[in-house]
Amino acid sequence: MRSEEGVGLGEYLADMQRRDLVSRIWEKDASVWREDPAQQVELAGRLGWLTVTEAMRREGEELEGFAEEVRQAGVRHVVLLGMGGSSLGGEVFRQSFGSRAGYPELLVLDSTVPAAVGWVTAQVDPVATLFLLSSKSGSTIETLSGYRHFRRVLEETESAAGGRAGEHFVAITDAGSPLEALARRDGFRRIFLNPPDVGGRYSVLSYFGLVPAALIGMDLKLLLERADRMREQCASVATQENPGAWLGASMGALARRGLDKLTLLISPAIASFGLWAEQLIAESTGKDGQGLVPVAGEPQIPPTPFDERGDIKGVLSKEELRGVYGPDRQFIFLRLEGDDNAGLDNRVQALEDAGQPMVYLRLQDRYDLGAEFFRWEFATAVAGALIGIDPFNEPDVQRSKDITNRALEAYRREGGLPLLVGEGTLPHLLSQAEPGDYFSAMAYIRQTPETDGLLYELRRRVLAHYPIATMVGYGPRYLHSTGQLHKGGPSTGLYLLLTADHPIDIPIPGQPYSFGVLVAAQAIGDMAALQSLGRRVVRIHLGTDPVAGLRRLVDELK
Image: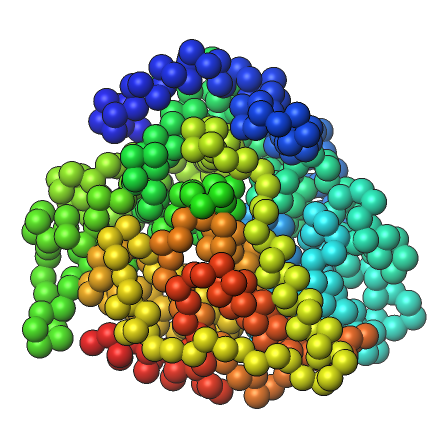
């Protein structure tokens, strides 16, 4: 990690030392973030992540025993049904580690798009599949809708008849939640009750992350050892030697200086860590009109602007780099030793040469992700204290949910959804861009390699034409991630909401609406919430072929 002199942190670190900030966090002193006694009581109940690895180490053998039981039972797939903090840790493990030989393949379904639900359904033999229902509140509509669907699939499968469908389900939730009651009623194979003082986005080192990690054959002992090693270092009172406090001071101090676009550069083998960090940072800091804007997976330098003929130019000069990446950026490079880092190393050096602030974090192997999970949780808590926000609540998330629920109620009564207004064009949206803004594409479509590539190209062209930070999210997943930032953070976003038709829809058993109706209602809720807050948002409908629609959109920016 660069020295504090490199990014001007000396005064902030000294102030943190004077305030005894690190010690107070470890004492679970909620006055670090809020002065109001009532708010402090609520905050104190959300700090279990500081010590959760102690409990999880005691459960390690049981989790590995459960994984062996599942493997011996012939389970070939594990499908994780969850949203946000309940699924993103599992997604990082899936992409970074894959499944050990002989262990089930993990699939993550964090979408209500019918094409996504149908794709996962087609990939698995339901009788040889274990479904993880992962929800802290136990009432997450996406998770419970997925359960209704796969329960029906199992019940319609002849070999799963006889009341044994429940054996294919596992619940991860808080004690006393609706999901716990459902799991007991329907005879789930296992119920893992998570510590209630661990919030969703801080829960990766609890059952929410460790159950899927165990099921794909990861070494939980090693993962937790790395996390605990970082935890011990973050308990150091000497702020300048504390890796989590140092990172948090860098994040918060630079944000207070106007460098609020936290741009992550990550080695390819662990690039999915950006999905998890994106949620942690956006949902923790994006509120009260301020916050850090996490930029993960952005096209990296050189972004190759276009010349007057629309062709791609070559490598950028320092002056051009400064023009593309404005004075609102801070960069963090997570470098995995032994990975294919040559291109990244060159790009990082070019950014440093151009004067951009850069922090280096080095991982010796993939299990160092355990350490990074804890480091980033601690750093985000510190950054929240410096910015002056409560990093553990999500005050604006409910707004979209409430509008979605009203839309679904309208569908129950009238058989149709309210109109989704706000159509416009991408050039018109981008014409409003000002220095310090950011662009976010929010796509309510199934994620595929093709859509990933087209959205990447869209971001690259936006970055080339308009030197602003870019983000992308798939709906409804991002509602449980960056959605809080979009609605509660600084009003610097330009939001492109993308919808599509669903020629093949899937019913949700027991509900009057289908997955297609549900995802449309969620898009309505998201759009209306942004509009009610005066955000700059445009909706573009991609029609029945989202890939073709995205291609047309990209072509508009030639």
